[in-house]
Image (cartoon, rainbow, N blue to C red):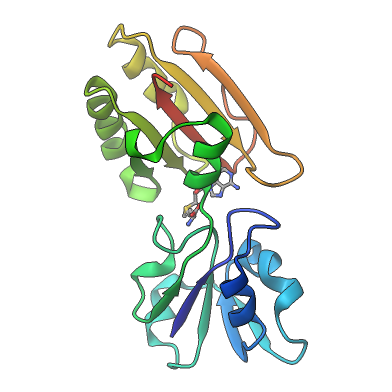
Length: 193
Ligand SMILES: C[S@@+](CC[C@H](N)C(=O)[O-])C[C@H]1O[C@@H](n2cnc3c(N)ncnc32)[C@H](O)[C@@H]1O
């Protein structure tokens, strides 16, 4: 199996990923990953939308998996096989906000990880780290903001929506009056930056 990172938005495919995509015969991916890779996939290759993530590990060895952003950032890089890196939402966020990655802690608050994501975020900002938080649409941003406000620290918060897409939107505020996401594809950056 080969897991190809297709970037977190349009125009972020690496030259290596493009060369790999041009040779694909059978690929699986989320609708978004397929869309990001589509221009370079051969016309006669079979492309299927993933309907059951649990079955991915049972697919034949020659299958290619398309993973949005970088496969090793909360992506499909946990599957066995070669990983072709991609440009992640973390990298784009750090570039847009001019934040050195060495100051950043990544927190994944997806699915069942909401409560733990909130706790780790609070702990990390107390330690002076900048948190990059990946969140799904059901994550309670309001709950996180109230826990952070209780720390009485001078924290900044950025909402980064649709990074690298034409509708990209980045709003920066402070924890007294933090910005709220308006779209389902968003990440947060929290700390002193
Ligand atoms: C399952 S994770 C996959 C992350 C991906 N592997 C990457 O490298 O960016 C999905 C989460 O990443 C964040 N994300 C991915 N792409 C994004 C984008 N273009 N803009 C903002 N956040 C994004 C969101 O928090 C989203 O819910």
